[in-house]
Length: 150
Image (cartoon, rainbow, N blue to C red):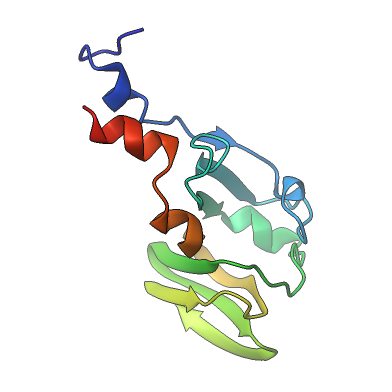
């Protein structure tokens, strides 16, 4: 099947995001006032070793703020990108038990194995989570092989 521009392989690289509840993620619970979009992951590209999600923090979260995650670890690296919508957005980032207030715009690198957590404190904005499994990134997956032949 060919895509819009006639190249099915290239079009297969474009994924429509999905609105998903936080409760689908290990160590997280559903929460009001934050919309979570799964943008791209291993579900879309098996064996690629990455995950990209976007959390949209709205003012409704602060009507009944809830800790929606517990400190946890991953066996892969993670990047958190915080972007304000308006004048400010502030999060509390916890790394290895140490809490720090972060004002957006900011980026947090969380190496594999580091216990971490994040909690909104103020404002509205976008929280982007990018997770990379370095081992999978280095391997030649079926998708990479297919794309290399284009």
